[in-house]
Length: 278
Ligand code: SAH
Picture (cartoon, rainbow, N blue to C red):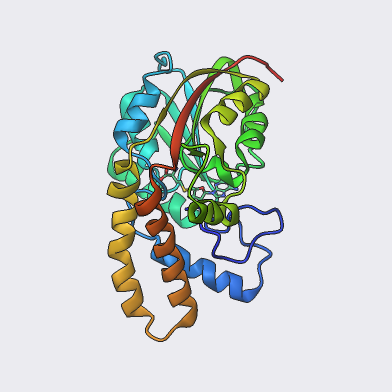
Protein backbone atom coordinates (compact mmCIF):
# COMPACT_ATOMS: atom_id res chain seq x y z
CA UNK A 1 0.00 0.00 0.00
CA UNK A 2 2.58 2.53 1.07
CA UNK A 3 4.82 1.95 -1.90
CA UNK A 4 7.13 4.78 -2.83
CA UNK A 5 7.90 3.06 -6.06
CA UNK A 6 6.02 5.31 -8.40
CA UNK A 7 6.87 8.83 -9.47
CA UNK A 8 5.62 10.96 -6.60
CA UNK A 9 2.68 13.26 -6.84
CA UNK A 10 3.30 16.94 -6.32
CA UNK A 11 1.69 16.82 -2.89
CA UNK A 12 3.95 14.01 -1.76
CA UNK A 13 1.21 11.47 -1.16
CA UNK A 14 1.93 7.81 -1.71
CA UNK A 15 1.60 7.04 -5.37
CA UNK A 16 0.10 3.64 -5.02
CA UNK A 17 -3.59 4.37 -5.33
CA UNK A 18 -3.59 8.08 -5.78
CA UNK A 19 -5.35 10.35 -8.20
CA UNK A 20 -3.36 10.13 -11.41
CA UNK A 21 -4.83 12.99 -13.40
CA UNK A 22 -1.63 14.98 -13.93
CA UNK A 23 0.98 12.23 -14.30
CA UNK A 24 3.48 11.81 -17.12
CA UNK A 25 2.79 8.77 -19.36
CA UNK A 26 5.44 6.61 -17.65
CA UNK A 27 3.79 7.21 -14.29
CA UNK A 28 0.38 6.37 -15.74
CA UNK A 29 1.74 3.07 -17.01
CA UNK A 30 3.31 2.21 -13.66
CA UNK A 31 0.06 3.05 -11.89
CA UNK A 32 -1.92 0.89 -14.34
CA UNK A 33 0.49 -1.96 -13.63
CA UNK A 34 0.04 -1.52 -9.87
CA UNK A 35 -3.72 -1.60 -10.22
CA UNK A 36 -3.40 -4.72 -12.34
CA UNK A 37 -1.21 -6.42 -9.74
CA UNK A 38 -3.58 -5.36 -6.96
CA UNK A 39 -6.78 -6.46 -8.70
CA UNK A 40 -8.98 -9.24 -7.37
CA UNK A 41 -7.71 -8.96 -3.79
CA UNK A 42 -10.12 -9.43 -0.87
CA UNK A 43 -8.83 -6.10 0.51
CA UNK A 44 -6.58 -3.29 -0.71
CA UNK A 45 -4.79 -2.80 2.60
CA UNK A 46 -4.11 -4.54 5.90
CA UNK A 47 -7.22 -5.36 7.95
CA UNK A 48 -9.65 -8.10 8.88
CA UNK A 49 -13.30 -8.62 9.79
CA UNK A 50 -12.23 -9.35 13.39
CA UNK A 51 -10.37 -6.03 13.67
CA UNK A 52 -13.28 -4.11 12.15
CA UNK A 53 -15.59 -5.74 14.72
CA UNK A 54 -13.19 -4.95 17.57
CA UNK A 55 -13.05 -1.28 16.60
CA UNK A 56 -16.82 -1.09 16.11
CA UNK A 57 -17.33 -2.50 19.62
CA UNK A 58 -15.69 0.71 20.95
CA UNK A 59 -18.46 2.82 19.39
CA UNK A 60 -21.91 3.09 21.08
CA UNK A 61 -24.60 1.03 19.30
CA UNK A 62 -26.05 2.81 16.28
CA UNK A 63 -29.80 3.14 15.63
CA UNK A 64 -31.31 2.28 12.19
CA UNK A 65 -31.48 6.02 11.44
CA UNK A 66 -27.67 6.33 11.79
CA UNK A 67 -25.37 7.16 8.88
CA UNK A 68 -21.82 5.89 8.44
CA UNK A 69 -19.28 7.28 5.98
CA UNK A 70 -16.62 4.78 4.82
CA UNK A 71 -13.77 6.80 3.30
CA UNK A 72 -11.37 5.17 0.80
CA UNK A 73 -13.51 2.04 0.92
CA UNK A 74 -11.66 0.15 -1.85
CA UNK A 75 -13.74 -2.85 -2.91
CA UNK A 76 -15.57 -2.61 0.40
CA UNK A 77 -14.53 -5.56 2.61
CA UNK A 78 -15.03 -3.45 5.73
CA UNK A 79 -18.10 -1.71 4.26
CA UNK A 80 -19.92 -5.03 4.07
CA UNK A 81 -18.76 -6.01 7.57
CA UNK A 82 -20.14 -2.70 8.88
CA UNK A 83 -23.45 -3.26 7.09
CA UNK A 84 -23.78 -6.69 8.67
CA UNK A 85 -22.87 -5.48 12.14
CA UNK A 86 -25.04 -2.33 12.28
CA UNK A 87 -28.49 -1.25 11.05
CA UNK A 88 -27.02 2.03 9.68
CA UNK A 89 -26.96 3.40 6.12
CA UNK A 90 -23.38 3.39 4.83
CA UNK A 91 -22.03 5.86 2.27
CA UNK A 92 -18.85 4.37 0.81
CA UNK A 93 -16.57 6.81 -1.03
CA UNK A 94 -13.65 5.74 -3.21
CA UNK A 95 -11.52 7.51 -5.84
CA UNK A 96 -10.79 4.51 -8.08
CA UNK A 97 -13.91 3.91 -10.14
CA UNK A 98 -13.38 0.17 -10.82
CA UNK A 99 -13.30 -0.47 -7.05
CA UNK A 100 -16.63 1.35 -6.70
CA UNK A 101 -18.12 -0.78 -9.48
CA UNK A 102 -16.83 -3.93 -7.79
CA UNK A 103 -18.43 -2.91 -4.47
CA UNK A 104 -21.71 -1.94 -6.19
CA UNK A 105 -21.88 -5.42 -7.76
CA UNK A 106 -21.29 -7.07 -4.35
CA UNK A 107 -23.96 -4.88 -2.77
CA UNK A 108 -26.49 -6.08 -5.36
CA UNK A 109 -25.43 -9.72 -4.98
CA UNK A 110 -25.75 -9.56 -1.21
CA UNK A 111 -29.05 -7.66 -1.38
CA UNK A 112 -27.56 -4.78 0.58
CA UNK A 113 -29.08 -2.15 -1.72
CA UNK A 114 -30.65 0.50 0.43
CA UNK A 115 -28.00 -0.11 3.12
CA UNK A 116 -24.73 0.60 1.27
CA UNK A 117 -24.37 3.53 -1.15
CA UNK A 118 -21.06 3.36 -3.05
CA UNK A 119 -19.86 6.41 -4.95
CA UNK A 120 -16.77 7.74 -6.69
CA UNK A 121 -15.38 10.64 -4.67
CA UNK A 122 -12.26 12.28 -3.32
CA UNK A 123 -11.62 12.18 0.43
CA UNK A 124 -10.15 15.67 0.11
CA UNK A 125 -13.39 17.13 -1.25
CA UNK A 126 -16.30 15.30 0.31
CA UNK A 127 -19.74 16.44 -0.83
CA UNK A 128 -21.97 15.91 2.22
CA UNK A 129 -23.89 18.34 4.41
CA UNK A 130 -22.31 19.32 7.74
CA UNK A 131 -23.07 17.13 10.79
CA UNK A 132 -24.39 14.38 8.51
CA UNK A 133 -22.71 11.28 9.96
CA UNK A 134 -22.79 9.42 13.26
CA UNK A 135 -19.63 7.52 12.39
CA UNK A 136 -16.77 7.98 9.93
CA UNK A 137 -14.72 4.90 9.09
CA UNK A 138 -11.42 4.76 7.24
CA UNK A 139 -9.26 1.63 7.02
CA UNK A 140 -5.85 1.90 5.39
CA UNK A 141 -6.60 5.08 3.48
CA UNK A 142 -6.21 8.22 5.64
CA UNK A 143 -2.48 8.27 4.81
CA UNK A 144 -3.49 9.54 1.35
CA UNK A 145 -4.36 12.84 3.04
CA UNK A 146 -2.31 12.50 6.20
CA UNK A 147 -3.63 11.52 9.63
CA UNK A 148 -4.06 15.05 11.00
CA UNK A 149 -5.35 16.55 7.75
CA UNK A 150 -7.95 13.80 7.38
CA UNK A 151 -9.14 14.03 10.98
CA UNK A 152 -9.50 17.80 10.72
CA UNK A 153 -11.13 17.85 7.29
CA UNK A 154 -13.74 15.22 8.17
CA UNK A 155 -14.71 16.53 11.63
CA UNK A 156 -17.38 18.95 10.28
CA UNK A 157 -19.26 16.00 8.76
CA UNK A 158 -19.75 14.41 12.18
CA UNK A 159 -22.74 15.01 14.40
CA UNK A 160 -22.25 16.09 17.98
CA UNK A 161 -20.85 13.06 19.85
CA UNK A 162 -20.05 11.44 16.50
CA UNK A 163 -17.22 8.92 16.27
CA UNK A 164 -14.43 8.26 13.84
CA UNK A 165 -12.37 5.07 13.47
CA UNK A 166 -9.23 4.95 11.30
CA UNK A 167 -6.18 2.77 10.85
CA UNK A 168 -2.78 4.38 10.49
CA UNK A 169 0.75 2.99 10.10
CA UNK A 170 2.78 3.57 13.29
CA UNK A 171 6.21 2.83 14.67
CA UNK A 172 6.09 0.24 17.44
CA UNK A 173 9.63 1.03 18.57
CA UNK A 174 11.61 4.20 19.25
CA UNK A 175 14.59 2.84 17.32
CA UNK A 176 13.52 1.01 14.17
CA UNK A 177 16.21 -0.94 12.31
CA UNK A 178 18.11 1.27 9.88
CA UNK A 179 16.93 -0.51 6.71
CA UNK A 180 13.34 -0.32 7.86
CA UNK A 181 13.52 3.38 8.70
CA UNK A 182 15.10 4.11 5.33
CA UNK A 183 12.26 2.30 3.59
CA UNK A 184 9.60 4.27 5.46
CA UNK A 185 11.45 7.58 5.06
CA UNK A 186 11.06 7.13 1.32
CA UNK A 187 7.61 5.59 1.54
CA UNK A 188 5.65 7.51 4.15
CA UNK A 189 7.87 9.91 6.09
CA UNK A 190 4.85 11.04 8.12
CA UNK A 191 4.82 7.71 10.02
CA UNK A 192 4.96 8.36 13.79
CA UNK A 193 4.78 6.53 17.09
CA UNK A 194 1.44 5.46 18.56
CA UNK A 195 1.86 8.11 21.28
CA UNK A 196 2.46 10.86 18.74
CA UNK A 197 -0.74 9.88 16.94
CA UNK A 198 -2.63 9.81 20.25
CA UNK A 199 -1.49 13.39 20.84
CA UNK A 200 -2.58 14.34 17.32
CA UNK A 201 -6.03 12.91 18.03
CA UNK A 202 -6.43 15.45 20.84
CA UNK A 203 -5.19 18.46 18.94
CA UNK A 204 -7.40 17.57 15.98
CA UNK A 205 -10.46 17.96 18.24
CA UNK A 206 -11.18 14.40 19.37
CA UNK A 207 -11.05 12.29 22.49
CA UNK A 208 -9.49 8.87 22.09
CA UNK A 209 -11.96 6.11 22.95
CA UNK A 210 -9.45 3.32 22.38
CA UNK A 211 -6.72 2.02 20.12
CA UNK A 212 -5.14 -1.35 19.33
CA UNK A 213 -2.49 -2.81 17.05
CA UNK A 214 -3.59 -4.91 14.11
CA UNK A 215 -2.00 -8.37 14.30
CA UNK A 216 0.45 -9.44 11.58
CA UNK A 217 -2.24 -11.80 10.24
CA UNK A 218 -4.23 -8.71 9.20
CA UNK A 219 -1.40 -7.93 6.75
CA UNK A 220 -0.87 -11.45 5.49
CA UNK A 221 -4.21 -13.24 5.18
CA UNK A 222 -6.29 -10.97 2.96
CA UNK A 223 -3.58 -8.68 1.63
CA UNK A 224 0.06 -9.76 1.22
CA UNK A 225 -0.56 -13.47 0.60
CA UNK A 226 -3.11 -12.79 -2.18
CA UNK A 227 -0.66 -10.26 -3.69
CA UNK A 228 2.08 -12.93 -3.61
CA UNK A 229 -0.28 -15.24 -5.54
CA UNK A 230 -1.02 -12.46 -8.07
CA UNK A 231 2.70 -11.78 -8.55
CA UNK A 232 3.31 -15.11 -10.24
CA UNK A 233 0.66 -14.64 -12.96
CA UNK A 234 1.53 -10.92 -13.28
CA UNK A 235 5.15 -11.80 -14.15
CA UNK A 236 3.99 -14.41 -16.67
CA UNK A 237 1.75 -11.86 -18.38
CA UNK A 238 4.62 -9.34 -18.78
CA UNK A 239 7.75 -11.21 -19.84
CA UNK A 240 10.66 -8.87 -20.63
CA UNK A 241 8.68 -5.80 -19.55
CA UNK A 242 10.96 -3.60 -17.49
CA UNK A 243 8.21 -1.44 -15.99
CA UNK A 244 6.26 -4.52 -14.88
CA UNK A 245 9.42 -6.09 -13.42
CA UNK A 246 10.03 -2.89 -11.43
CA UNK A 247 6.47 -2.84 -10.09
CA UNK A 248 6.77 -6.50 -9.07
CA UNK A 249 10.15 -5.97 -7.40
CA UNK A 250 8.97 -2.91 -5.47
CA UNK A 251 5.91 -4.74 -4.22
CA UNK A 252 8.04 -7.70 -3.15
CA UNK A 253 10.37 -5.32 -1.31
CA UNK A 254 7.48 -3.84 0.66
CA UNK A 255 6.35 -7.34 1.61
CA UNK A 256 9.89 -8.36 2.53
CA UNK A 257 10.16 -5.32 4.83
CA UNK A 258 7.10 -6.49 6.70
CA UNK A 259 8.34 -10.08 6.82
CA UNK A 260 11.56 -8.87 8.47
CA UNK A 261 10.40 -5.95 10.57
CA UNK A 262 6.77 -6.45 11.60
CA UNK A 263 7.87 -5.97 15.21
CA UNK A 264 8.97 -2.43 14.37
CA UNK A 265 5.85 -1.08 12.64
CA UNK A 266 2.29 -1.89 11.74
CA UNK A 267 -1.22 -0.53 11.60
CA UNK A 268 -3.04 0.78 14.65
CA UNK A 269 -6.81 1.24 14.87
CA UNK A 270 -7.71 4.54 16.54
CA UNK A 271 -11.31 5.04 17.64
CA UNK A 272 -12.25 8.60 18.63
CA UNK A 273 -15.18 10.76 19.70
CA UNK A 274 -15.45 14.31 18.44
CA UNK A 275 -15.02 16.97 21.14
CA UNK A 276 -14.64 20.18 19.13
CA UNK A 277 -17.35 20.93 16.62
CA UNK A 278 -16.34 23.21 13.74
N1 SAH B 1 -10.44 0.47 2.95
C1 SAH B 1 -10.03 -0.47 1.93
C2 SAH B 1 -9.04 0.12 0.92
C3 SAH B 1 -7.73 0.59 1.51
S1 SAH B 1 -6.54 1.02 0.24
C4 SAH B 1 -9.43 -1.70 2.60
O1 SAH B 1 -8.98 -1.60 3.76
O2 SAH B 1 -9.38 -2.75 1.94
C5 SAH B 1 -6.71 2.78 0.13
C6 SAH B 1 -7.86 3.17 -0.74
O3 SAH B 1 -7.95 4.59 -0.77
C7 SAH B 1 -7.70 2.73 -2.20
O4 SAH B 1 -8.83 2.01 -2.59
C8 SAH B 1 -7.55 4.04 -2.97
O5 SAH B 1 -8.05 3.97 -4.29
C9 SAH B 1 -8.32 4.98 -2.09
N2 SAH B 1 -7.96 6.40 -2.27
C10 SAH B 1 -6.74 6.92 -2.51
N3 SAH B 1 -6.81 8.25 -2.60
C11 SAH B 1 -8.11 8.58 -2.40
C12 SAH B 1 -8.82 9.80 -2.38
N4 SAH B 1 -8.20 10.97 -2.56
N5 SAH B 1 -10.15 9.78 -2.14
C13 SAH B 1 -10.81 8.60 -1.95
N6 SAH B 1 -10.19 7.41 -1.98
C14 SAH B 1 -8.86 7.39 -2.20
